[in-house]
Image (tube, rainbow, N blue to C red; front, side, top):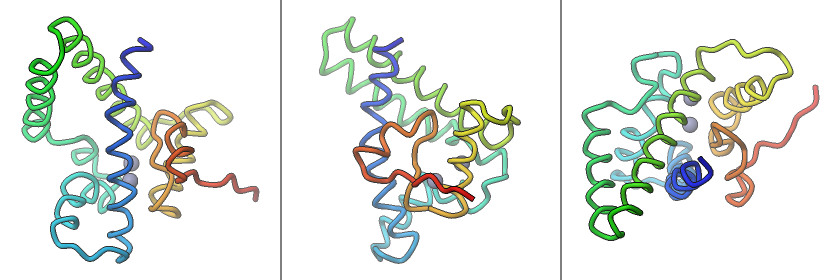
Length: 154
Ligand SMILES: [Zn+2]
Ligand SMILES: [Zn+2]
């Protein structure tokens, strides 16, 4: 399991970097047309309608192309058993990640629980700090990427 979340984490990190960049373009910091299109495909659709359940997860058709590419790259660059392990770990990690993201939008975690804090964090990402707070399952990668949303006391 550690290896699995590790391989998803390793794939998630560059995506997070990309998101940090694309979040900048959302706010007009970057004006590249291709970046806009890529952002919209990857993330913007969800931000445009965060409560549309049918747009919460990556579309399966598009996902199968991405998953297939990852499989081909891993199988052709790593020894068989390692390639398959990293692929399965990454895929499981991604599915868990997507399910947790879905839960953060539609679930009702108990006040004070870990999931409750993640939900509060993700709500801030959507409505207050779109250039920060990309962590879904934890705030781990927001530390090295300097995108942590500071704790606010009311
Ligand atoms: Zn969301
Ligand atoms: Zn977002």
